Length: 475
Image (cartoon, rainbow, N blue to C red):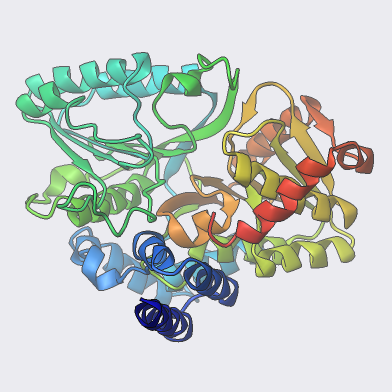
């Protein structure tokens, strides 16, 4: 028996070392997984299979979707004609445009109009109105769709539109939606709607991709109206959950050319999940959007299928290009070494940084890790604020009056490496100022965190912060 146990331990250790050496990943995560697999023989390997494996881009996304929409052709044209492209006002804006063109084929569009929502009730009122007005198709993708009052309202609208002959597609994350939702959408499916969990395994309870979550929140209606931001679908997002109280988030409603990018992103995610679905992508999915408004922006996607952490790189580039003031709002602040170092350099260079985080957890380990890193930033000279008027779920960064990024990506390692995310990078001064003002209002509803705030915490709380920080590569 002892010989068998020794042999199994040796095999386990050999596999752990091979994984750590030959799978390309961040060194801290490699050491974390090596430690888990070594200290938990057998169990560690199983955890790795479900939570630690990387993805292969070619096995997931049908990249021809972007070709069908003309995204690749437009991106290549913008790359080749960089000297003839319309120049934006600030060099940082032009450098971000170039970077995202090369890393994500994220085309720069200018004929856009944006409405900003900071309140869930108002956002869903407008969304439901737009859904009721759909004539051709509704493509809807959310991390979370709860089976509650708000989710039921959404389902009823989708059923009514499907009865009218509108093509309805719903894509949800099975982890974010807390289990199977097919029964919840049974009537919608019966009336012709299509509903898919994102990349669900054909073996329901044996899904080696469970750690890779579709955290995007995208809606496209008739190819003319698009939504992107932080709100999911559920009663808590409109302030009906007493645990969280008022839910502070930010979402964008977009009219114009960038809707095409949201449409392309949706269909790439759809085809990755609905392997048997066939969609004839006709002109109705990308109609001409001619607006007088000019809001330059790019839609940038990132996910574990790529080694390039595109949204994180965007954050770093924005910080490096700042000249005066950086404002950040995020519910989870767990930066990796590169991002933290960039922030510390900005502080040492005399820049002002405001960081707004929640004053309460929705995920205990993540919140304690957030406190740990927020304290490090505060001690380096940043202003750190704990939002007091409910739960703060905004994912935004504003640099000076030059650029804003807003979408689904949190400031944590999970969003950078493990989740599928989508953000809008906007280069329109009035929009930047509007988002900046929402952050300033949140600061007024916040408590500024001082050294005394942390010093007053119990030894146990500080221990949880340290322990959570050690788990941060895996959170």
